[in-house]
Image 1 (cartoon, rainbow, N blue to C red):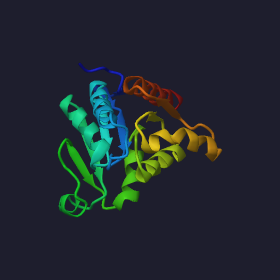
Image 2: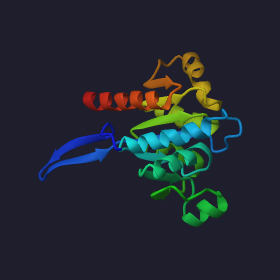
Image 3: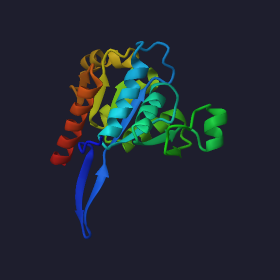
Length: 200
C-alpha cells in the first residue's frame, strides 16, 4: 500500500507532475558492532520509505544501507546507489561492493569521502542507523548543509553518539530528530522535509 507522504506536486504546462522525495539511509557497512536488531530495523526503514512512495538513496555498499535497499525493493520501491568506484568493474572487483537490490548505481569515481558528499547532497533527508566514521562524515556534511536528518536510536555505533556530539559541538541542534521507532522517525523526517519546502 503506497502512502502519498513522500511526493511533492508541481504545476507545469501539461498539468501536474509529482517529484518523489529521496531519503538517504546512512549506516555501518560493517555491522558487527551494531545492535542485534539493527539489520532488521534497516530493512524496515527501507520498506517504509518505499511504502511512502519515496526513493531510497544509499552508498551502494554492504551492511545496513544494503539491508535497507533489500527492504525497499521487496516493498516495490526504487533504490539509487552512489558508488565510490569509477566503474561497475571497480565497484565489484576493487571495492567488493554489491549491485543487487538497486535500480540504478551511479559510479562517482570519488572514493568514499567524495561519494559521501554526493549522496547527502542528492537526498532530501538523511537517516542514520548505527554507523562508523563514514556515517559520521555523512551526518556532519548534512548537518553543515542544514539538511533534515533522522537518527534511529538504539541501533548502536555512531547513531547512539550523535546527540552527545551535537551538544558538545556548540553549533545548535540542527534539523535533526531522534527516535527509537522507525515508523515514528520517518514520519518526523517527512514533516521536516515538508516544512523545508514550505519555507523555501
